[in-house]
Image 1 (cartoon, rainbow, N blue to C red):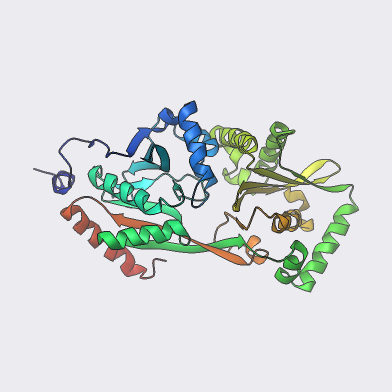
Image 2: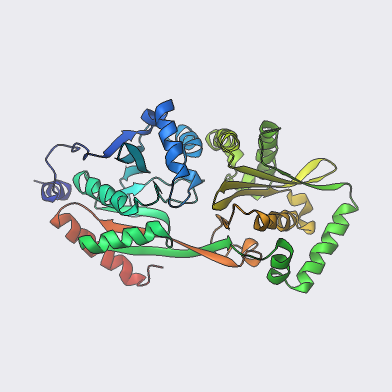
Length: 388
């Protein structure tokens, strides 16, 4: 008896072969094939021309993440080429489950230390990229019921282009989750922004905490955008983060060999490409709060923060975030994404702007597959009509 997956494959607009040949201009390969000098050079060039920056999909970050978290090479990377150049890139996986449901899906590859799922797409090529991706997904759906894109920005040219392509194709899609996370985007000076964000009472309390901390020894803030001392700094960051609640919960980078190595390799790559900024708050030369920004003009991403919980009464995390407001003085950085969860108890009270991100599910394949997806989408949105 034919299974439902078998019937789906017959209904899809591709041959009975497990994987149809890529369309002209579209190349899909296991990620180790991209770890070559010529492919990395094209990749770096794409990042420099991207319509929307995403450091987590640049070569210096994505390749270390794949080496650490996908050593078997199961993740494939879709590359779209036009006029002899790479104009789009997105890591993809066929997954057997859709969160807690046993529903196969084709999805962008997201891991616990990837805070944006947007593809890298050259400016001006947004619509051709989405057409190429959707066309390829139709032909290579396999057993996947739909395409699922996680942690996608819901503003900007990529989202606008995707909506336009979905409309022109009459393709069913739904926003199945939406949230807003803290963002820094203002023309104010750092001091003016700080004064508008926090009440006079809270600012007074921070001044008091800084004064009490200074009574314990020499307090220093240091900011660096080069690679000097980077290896030692990364080890200090790993140790500091692991010393707190994340270490206890097993979610610190140093809790797992792969994620610790990811930090070491990715930060070295970020520094080599001028993407790294480090902030350190130290007491008598020992770091008690550390922060990593990934610089991707015209934006930036506040990647990781760690602080010594033994000094929690002095709010070292907030003190280092106060220094981080100096990003507002950087003419090359118009905004910074916090990469924090929605309603974060600390950063939401300091950074007042918000960036909407969400998860989108999109119909792919043939008529029967799309009909089944439509039923699933109606049930999912029936519980959350606004995609929340």
